[in-house]
Figure 1: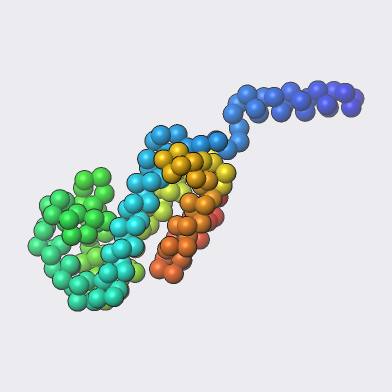
Figure 2 (figure 1 turned 180 degrees about the vertical axis):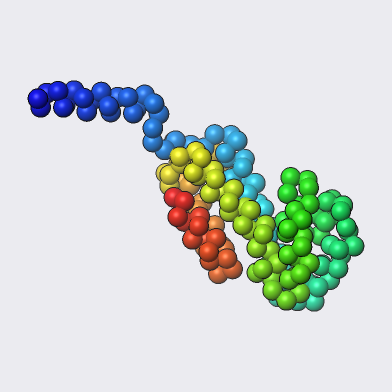
Length: 169
């Protein structure tokens, strides 16, 4: 009876190994690109949030310029890059920016920040990655180090997003 259990356990372990269960050693090219592009988008949102937080007048000016740019994604992207997603205007992000840029910088850039973090979380969850999974384009940096840095960067501005990213690993 004990022998059967040992054989069954060995076969189950071999089946799991053959099926490729467990975290990948590194992200594939598509996951890597998605993760790093999301980080760049998040950095754009952070930079703009900081700029308009330190100068509410700049926030109001940018909101007026974005409004004048209308439906031209290239013009909007030159002003506030995080309001454009994949070459298209993110209407929800533009609306929030127009509404809050001069009064509440955190809310003004929340939509693009959420979008970026959602993409990062999706890469982690869809790939089955864990903290030891390497990011090839970042010199094989472990995903945990990457996530820790992102959490530090956004924790004071968007603590709920930092927590969401932390919960993904």
